[in-house]
Length: 254
Image 1 (tube, one colour):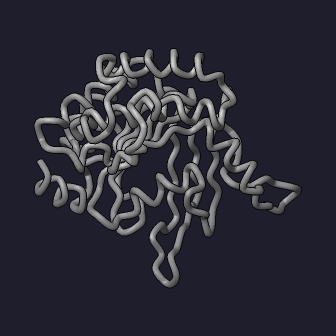
Image 2 (tube, one colour):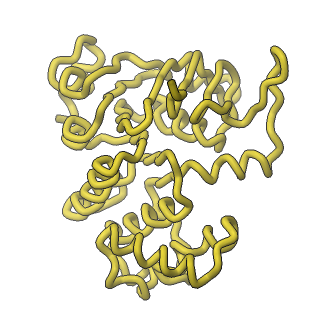
């Protein structure tokens, strides 16, 4: 059997004296959509950043597709990878942030083709053709020549998704991708994410969009104070939660 796409065991992370992750155990199988929910400060985004080694863990083990994140094991010892090795492994993981972080001086198509050319070694012609295909996939085929300032927030976020897909990742991470958007723009971004899920992309999504989690998620994980309080089928966790803390949170967001 193949390894899980994401496997965390006793994962811990601290910032100074503040322990943000206090022993996270979580598994995401290939092709699954895992939705992380919880209040601000619960550790959701920190966990997401640990998955692609934007944050170094302080304890436990974390692997993606069977390979340790940020480390190599020799005997019983873990040795941190060099930054170049980390960057090479990070190519397989796409990440979409709250803020779009597009290059303002580049058009949509230039933003999407930048990494394949500069990092992936693709020819400009091939990268451009693929970028145009991806912009069409996210419903922005007619906006390829537009600069970020000429696009709405929802359109910029869809360009950011296309940019992440341009490196052909096997795992996509979304850190509250709709939280910075006006309410009427949220639907277009969620539609793109629904299609990615339908196409079989493995996704870990930090979100407050409980409707999306219930409809698209294979697993819903409620986190609070650095621990997993409750995890399981979204229709159970979000409709009939077992824990009082989960019920209290959902009563404020539903």
